[in-house]
Image (tube, rainbow, N blue to C red; front, side, top):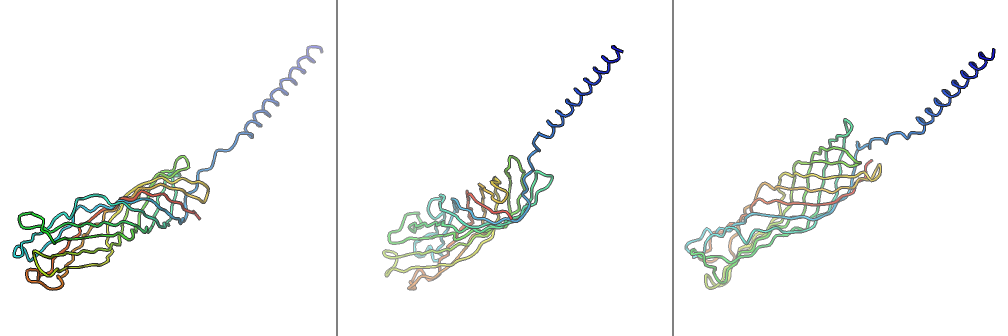
Length: 269
């Protein structure tokens, strides 16, 4: 009997020990925090942006069809080629669709108002390439706004969307030019003036990173490169009409590009 009692006590102790171990394991499992949910990027959003921009045009030209009778020549590459800096600011909006679950595609439209002004002035030249006193050609191109519709493709990691983007772009540009010819070429002084505004089409490529600060607030940094495809040509007669300058001269603005670095804030619905 004594042996049977000892065996029963040992069995009870083992059962209690197993039960306590199982309870501790259950408590450990229940105490473990659940894995963090994957951020949900799917949805519409709207926001604002601002930053810096650089405008570059490789070459503008002036052609005097009255040459060489008046001793003046065509001018190619009006002034040195350099970048013109300015600011941009505007609004953006679009829709994102998250899948797989760390990949994203989307579409976005935006418009940016700009302060990009490019002004160039050079003297006219003789057929021998010598600057002619009393003459000048002034040309300018001022980008007033940029707009685009772009697709987006990106990867979601570390609560951040890393993406590439590209699509069609538009630029609204104000062009103006003035050619001035005076003594000793002609007298009295005469000028050719032209000014117009137009919207040109092109393309845009870029990329960026967007951080989900809250479930509704998105913060981004972004770089965009705009290639505006077509240049512009305009003609305007000299006034007053002057012998040797009776045919209107031609001004040509080459195609150009704009680079934009900007930050933005969006609200996701």
